[in-house]
Amino acid sequence: MDRTKEQARRLADSLASRGVSFDDAVESLTKLQIEMPSWAVGDSGTRYGTFRERGSARTIWDKIDDVAEIQRVCGICGAMAMHIAWDKTDDGQYLPVKRYANERGLALGTMHPDGFTKQEYIYGSIATPIGAVREASILHYKECVRVARELGIKAIGMWVPDGTNYAGQDDLRARKHRLTDGMRALYDALDDDMQLFLEYKPFEPYFYSTDVFDWGMSLLTCTKLGPRAKVLVDLGHHLSGVNIEQIVAVLMDEDRLGAFHFNNRKYADDDLIVGSVNPFELFLILNEIVAGQAAGLSPGVTYMLDQSHNIEPSIEGILFSVMNVHAAYAKALAVDRAALAEAQGNLDVVGAHRILKDAFETDIAPLLAAAREQMGLPGADPLSAYRDGGYAQKIADERNFGGMGTLGG
Ligand code: AFD
Ligand code: MN
Ligand code: MN
Image (cartoon, protein in one colour):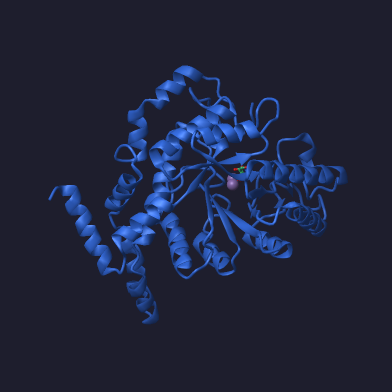
């Protein structure tokens, strides 16, 4: 038996001893879907500037081509998450975007409204004291729902980038009421088969208070709105030391976990390659997903990347992220759930921890290889397949430095 087959056999035996079926795990790995953010393939930067990448997307058509290339080598990225601020034709049309995405074998995923690109948002988009701006934002939300309906999109991913910079600047309770009223207007505009994912973030672009500042504020708002309002967990939107996997467990238990924006942070909302800073945390998050879904909770969670690749080639950063999520998910599937429950029941603190750690340290390469083979994907892994495919050189030659920033600039 060749070495690869021997490795797969050994892993299958090890998984079987943990009550895990190799084939079932492979099946799950082929079913995972991660939406690709349209905004991640354009140039992006920090407030200190943008390093333009040769070959980055210039237009929505380039973005779709890039996501199609990502899907060609990944196989689990068949939808592009949209941002209403940027993802339309030059004459403001959306249907041609859907047609071209479908031609390239892609669906359109979650629609993200704007709230930060216009001057009138200076004091906020919906929690602002300026009534006319709140009304304009509600009209914008309704336009997002109309466009989502036109494109067959079933989820609105709402980041409310509102806040204040100084104590006393505004009445914090009044802002809470404005936020709730605005989210109510958005929720009431949804079709019955649409969901609202409300994203939270502790700071930025404001630095004293943010109106949807943590998971509790998002959950509180969602519970006021209705059952189709759920929390969007962006991994970079937590202060240092926050136990994200515990938030995920609680939201799943409340049937309020809607979606993820995957990325990684070292210090702030750094939008780095997910799993690049804290792969164990990523595994623990997916472990909660696998455990919760095994208990029938949150079957329909939406996974998205939300990253900004400021110095690394965007597509390579995205591919590495997809690989890290896929690997963490495979490790979460490799957990011996029965032994874990038994160790927990026996108050075996170290034994229980070791069972999770053993899964995290399991070499799941044969699982991913089998899933790639089942999906008919090229190459040993997405990054190698991409680098061998010549797409980077093609777009660099065609596009040069004509890339558009995430703000279309
Ligand atoms: C920024 C925000 C937030 C939002 C994303 C897309 O911090 O994460 O989801 O832009 O609008 O990263
Ligand atoms: Mn986000
Ligand atoms: Mn963010």
